[in-house]
Image 1 (cartoon, rainbow, N blue to C red):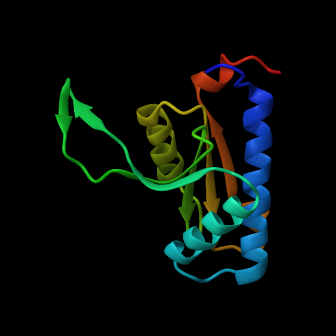
Image 2 (cartoon, one colour):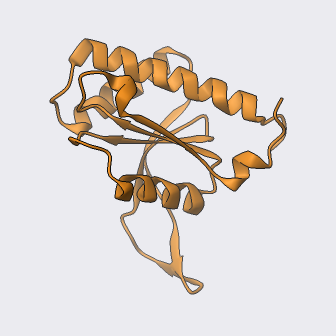
Image 3 (cartoon, rainbow, N blue to C red):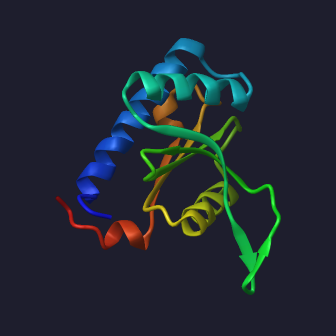
Length: 138
């Protein structure tokens, strides 16, 4: 993880949030999650961010690899997981899901973005892991 700092990850996160705000401004609330995902991918690419979608997460149980369809919505610059929702309210289970994805994928930061809201800033949760905490600040 050379040259990876908390500051870099935070800057990437701000760019992702800016892109989500732009998508929400263009589309508004009420569409399917998949539509927001397609548009957010396009917006992230236009902002020179590397984005991968529907990434399969390897999962093992007691050392035995399992064949699962566990997928992460987006991974940006191989550092930040973005989990998209279109729900009335973000629930603790959504945060737990993102924390589990962060652990399994060994990523330092995740953003939970709920597009089903009038003000997108109210629908964004940022979560970090121990991986983030041990990185240099700058």
